[in-house]
Length: 466
Image 1: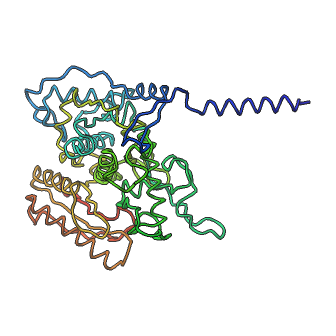
Image 2: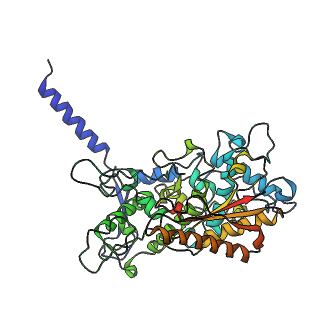
């Protein structure tokens, strides 16, 4: 028979042990981050700091290459992104990328064994071009967030084919059984919302779609509008905002007072400088998700897409930060790889020879995304237009089909007109970029209006004869 007293004592001892293991090991250290007397302090443990330092150790850099001499574009075939680098710099970048992204697979991660290096038969090579262009975009245009530190492929990948910290859209749980009705996407604990009861897919709302991060009201908050898309403050929009804040806090390994004075959350004058940096970071992430990740949806195979919605992996705050308030603890790899500062962010058109089985089927030069109800082209859209114009300039026989789309929010007839306006805006921008009008074909797609997502608020640029 089981000795009840011994069993209970053992269970109690086990429970206490688990509680102790789950706690931070002392000593706990604190660092003041804001004004004195405001309680703006970050708490940490020596053990956690050691783990963080080890996780953010920089890989050893290879000797710098000679920036002079013939360029890679003049010597090698089909170099679409790094063609302005010297041959030495190009070779060094390729070796570094292999170490950063595919140390086990080597060159065969992007190049098929026994095939010409110029071939584009591997989807990973097509993706790698776009990611290099994205790196150039971040380093060139988002100094308001990354400063002079910048990013490299290693910042996110850290030896993995796919960064460990990426996210996919979650399926809407829909109407729950019983009388409670729709649950506002809540009570489904996931890592993105800190395993809380807050909405589970705030990342799609704010890091891909154009949800407004505004929750401060001047009167008692109403329950609606539901979700992040409504205008003005509400209880629902507050909950969506706090779900995003949980993601940001966990991603950087900090608490709210890293950016805010908790006595006056909304007051920018009493916030730390990090709040402004974070503001730019949210917009940077949205820019690169819509301008570089989502347009690759047709390139990625199904097994690389999200199980719930079939979307591509996207970037969040955790992708670069991985638990550190500054990625790589603020150390800059660009100091060792200055050639990555010179990447042309407009050079990665998804084009290649007609023999390319991936791109020939796709033939999409780019996708331009729009804010809800708008037909204005943003910076990422202008980059796509410049890239398409460059691809057409390289092939005088090629032409371009452009098709406009709108999402399902609002009046459908007005949305169809909005889709046309977007296509007209892109046509005019292409003409301004030097593309002759007779090389642009406005093509009406089978469906002008799609689902209520940012992917539906777009114009496709499809190459003909490339």
